[in-house]
Image 1 (cartoon, helix red, strand yellow):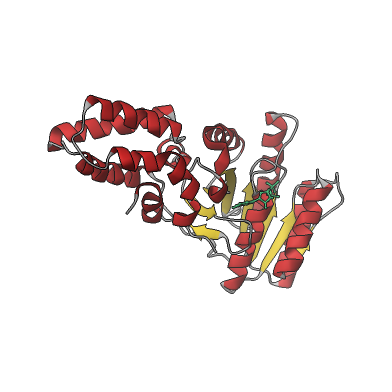
Image 2 (cartoon, helix red, strand yellow):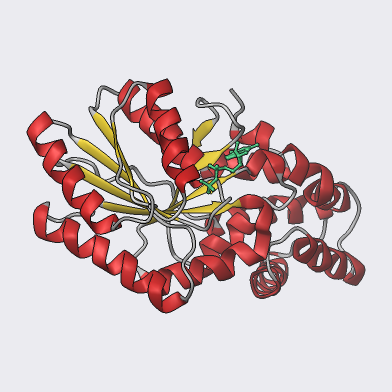
Length: 298
Ligand code: GDP
């Protein structure tokens, strides 16, 4: 089982290690600021967030009389910590908690659903998975395979069928079987943004009318290796449906872990989980302190 520190190894190696090197010794010069800005941008922190971060640090250096690189590194750690989104427990304290999971195909959505189901089952919850992506037979099969491995039931319909009907049936089944947690997979891609919006809205409405205050969580799965593109994707989904939080998959396979700073700075959403590998246990609860340590050293 990999933890957050370990899964940021590639990110550290690619860019953030260079920042630590840059701020290892000596005095801060104009060149230090320029290099820092360039490295942050390279590290997928995003131009806007990088510029704002450097600006804040310059102000602090001025106000607090920071001259040494080591002191600047400490200030950077504090600012990065403040930028990162907070961890937040899932809102599952309901007789039937409904978690809608959205994200583009290939982002790690199915795997993240399986990891979450596995974890919640371990915590004593009674979980049911719902194959709400009826557009791809492979997605339905994949969910069944995971369900069998984890030992949780899966509700699915025909390929090409109505996802709304599958969700409707799943809510009925959950209620009659005393299940307390539904995790719903959704289509990762529809022909147009309009279709995506209409589909997600329809599912949301079916849930809302049948489960009090549901869906209780709408998680967006983002692939950490998409870096800044992931942010653009997130914005599209945020236009389509009210997202409550993020699962950042494949952090271990990416050098772009810096994108978490841009998520915190620009999306105002909590990150709940981080995918740290391909196995069921490779799923860490997001932790800002661990993330800062992973990026810049403790
Ligand atoms: P989906 O199309 O969004 O449902 O994506 P999948 O869940 O099928 O994942 C796509 C690929 O990414 C698969 O090969 C997964 O094993 C892999 N994957 C998913 N999450 C992680 C992760 O956290 N780390 C690593 N290394 N691979 C992952």
